[in-house]
Amino acid sequence: MIALSLAPVFELIIKRVQLGVEKPQRFWQILFVVIILVALVFNSWLSIAEFSREDYRGEPAYWENIASILPSDGKIVALTQDYGYPLMYYGWRKVTLWPNRGERTLSSLRGSVKEFEQYLAKRIEGKSYFLITAFGQFNDQPDLKQALAERYPVLAEGDGYLIYDLVHPLNASSP
Image 1 (spheres, rainbow, N blue to C red):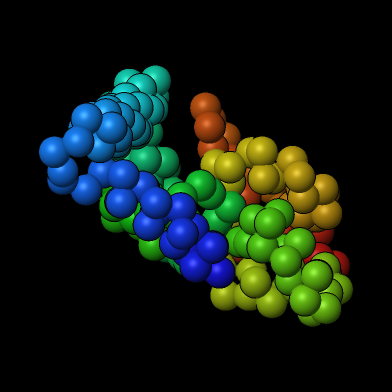
Image 2: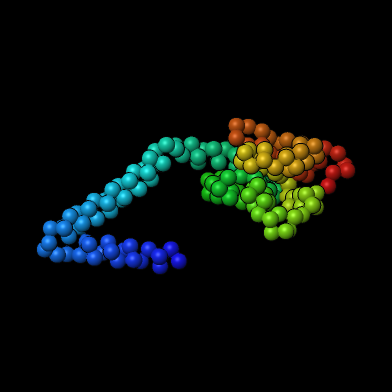
């Protein structure tokens, strides 16, 4: 719909820019080229500025460190950024993802609200460890935060990560 409604505008622009001998058309040609160049340069500058603001050189060492701390004797469920890809790429560790707050909200909007206790039990079934590196997401899910803190011991904690031991619950009545 947007493309159809913009078609008359583009038709007018193309008619103005078409090659011709008249001076007004030359003005429109130069204006059109200048606008295109400004748009290209501006978008290129935004991309370059975005990459120069962030320093990703520490990422490989960070994820390799977390992978070295994670025990290799069990499966892992994780609440982590970038869908766990950095851990899989740099640390060679595959994880099952815990849904972030947006995914849980979308699920509830679709009408598939699941009782948290059953959902937690199903997601951690067969898993040995729960890794958290996305603390903003973790803090936005108080039910998960409370359940893990009350039921499972912390196996390891460091700068930017938290690992819960799901194999050895704090008390026998835990799911």
